[in-house]
Length: 171
Image (cartoon, rainbow, N blue to C red; front, side, top):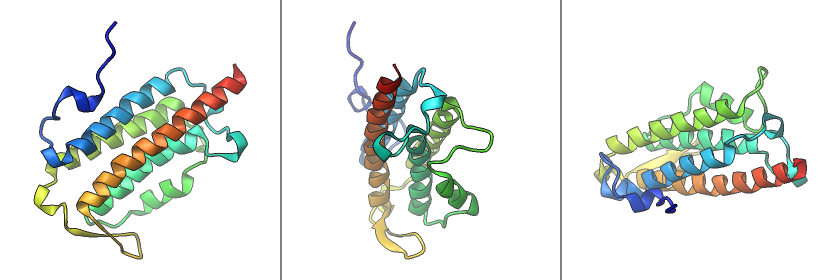
């Protein structure tokens, strides 16, 4: 059986400019890998923090939350009260209890929204200033979008290691 090509090796993503292709490729690659690692992941392990490290549940929430927040800043918008609530909740289960599927689907939706925004992003705006947070820390549209991609891949790697560790302790 031939090994499946990584997303970036499959060619350009329709509707996304050549400058934003790496961002789109990284987000889609992260989604594919997340699905593999979360397949049959036990919900009772979502909040386990091996050696005090962040839990798989935290990483799932954080992956979605950061994409949402960083893409909001790239649009030159302020965070909403709901986004602040989501930020505060990262690392905690909901009162009703999250399922793995809930958290994976939240990430899927956020990737879809990010891809839609990439399609609408004019390359001419990439060097435009964007302030981050209340302090207005300096960045650009391009800087934020690329950071979202690299941040997603970094936390995906952490999630994959944590998932393997907590599964190994149980199995």
